[in-house]
Image (cartoon, rainbow, N blue to C red; front, side):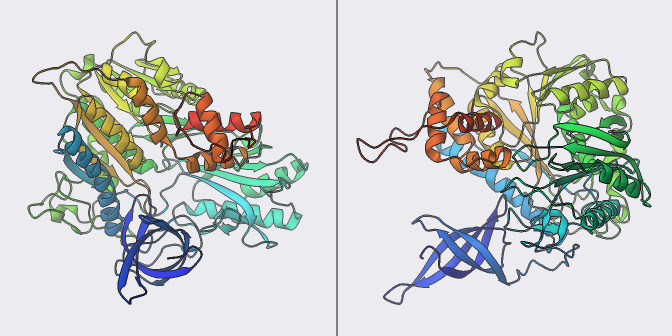
Length: 632
């Protein structure tokens, strides 16, 4: 295999997140067949694809997907969206929903099981957890309550468009009107905005030249009320206040399935291609709406963190609450991957897949006949209507820590059955929102603290009886994990949206005395590669103890190195700050921050060579990335 050449092969397996292993058969100079595996992103199991070799290594090569030459035998579903294949989003739409669930389930279990292979060989720690299944989303169409659309063109010099990034491109934008994972009201807003600003010939913002006006459109929707919140994000390079007022009138004149509750104009002059606010102006209505979840109300503003699948969040939080309370799990039985889904009616219609020979569970409390034509959302909400009546007898005197609490959704769901819940979150705006929402819900036993979990938990006087963890994608800082372990609580519930970082943290928990008891998956993102995982960890009481000397500083360096690759840091800096940084600059900043790097990493090749030093602006950006990945 040579770099730059085009090859064809069959996808043998796909690892999370959508990392395909393609088998290529070549012949050597003697005519003997030689099989090689190449990693290509964006393909499905069983597909025959063409790809261009990007990196060629002895053990593992990488390629760029060019085209699918033969569909996979698994691809028996018609994609819901007319832009499938062009848009870089829902890559699983050609798989029947039960096959999507099976694929995600297998990916997560393989990652976790690989942790135990290592733990077993090194420490004798064996896998014996219960897998409680993957819970399907109550809706697989129109399930998202928030979208960030980008302005641009579908090809260079093309007409104005508003939508999502084209597959494999960071520049071209595919029109998102008709997107099937959001309500039809989103398309009405998109069409109105594009038609108006095309007529006025207002240019879109070019993230390479940093010239132009129209940047993003943020749309949020309350599932319980149908309220829409629309935010137009522009640069300040042109005064378009008159246009903004006019388009507001047009938006307010549209007929929606729900109703437009607010239209906002946000000014963003930052270099990064992210939605953020330098200034915010309410053009009409208000800048918030109220969403309901599991009987509680939450005030949602443009930048509030809230799970993007509201009904799916009810499933996720119900499962997490079940694990905390130690009761029976709600939803799909432990031996079942899922249930058949009617895409149009979103009903349970039949058993579609059983993963073990003795599996008879479909949905807890329902037989196969009962399951037909029953709403998933109804099943999942049965045990959530009266939270206080479900608690174990002794739970009312318990203190719960909700670490990485965001806007306090999980904390407030647990609060009615606990003595006190303390949430810790590093984003101050999220903490203020959590306090406000707790007041709205009349919960006086919730306390929310702004700060880094690593530092704040040393300052909290109360000791927890239970701990809930819902960290960012890159997981938990190794030092924070050990502080969490030191509390010695009986059970910890860990919610993760990235199983690869979850696996690293589970290895640490297992090494220091906690064992994985139960695992569940929740499909919050049908049609996409993403999946949530909920894990119940229990403290293991040793039969005997021995004392060992352990250099924790060495563990810190190793764990920090595992948090993010150089490429991930480069990608973060480019996305957030619009800056390109080299591996040399990253290693220099790592050393300054006390993170060990390879002894000879990026040293000059000759003794007298001049080594460039990282500029202050790029150093600050790299430090921000290291903080984001919890490495400092």
